[in-house]
Length: 139
Image 1 (cartoon, rainbow, N blue to C red):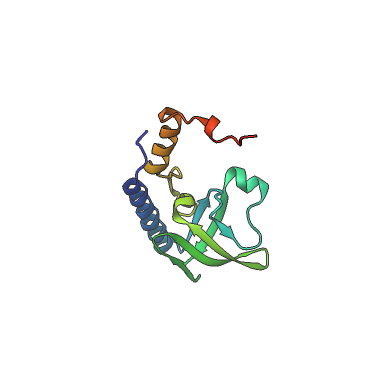
Image 2 (tube, one colour):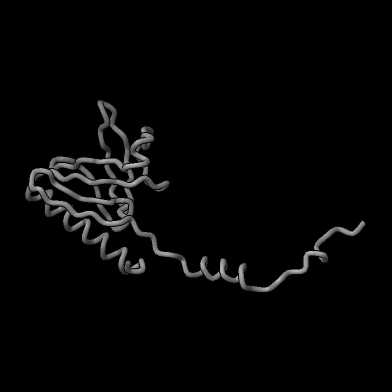
């Protein structure tokens, strides 16, 4: 598998956005699959236990008001009869599809590894040995 990088993640997110708006224009509605992530906000409702496992399918149509910027989709979506303010990071979108057009794009939810975090972890494993006897309180 290709190593996730910021550039790869950004380009996949741009592809998700492009496909989303193309489907919306062609079919008038588009579905997305949102993977559970601590940064996803689905109002007070949140994710149900099954949705945390399998993801949440959301529907957008051309008459809805929503915003898609570089980071996330923001919208007020209705669940049952209750409107919920939603914040969906683009990186949490695992799929964009249309049953009407029989087309789909699925993509793994990738996170670039922070190189500084990896370096700190490796230093802890292979780095200096600290003598803890000097840290102990003297009696």
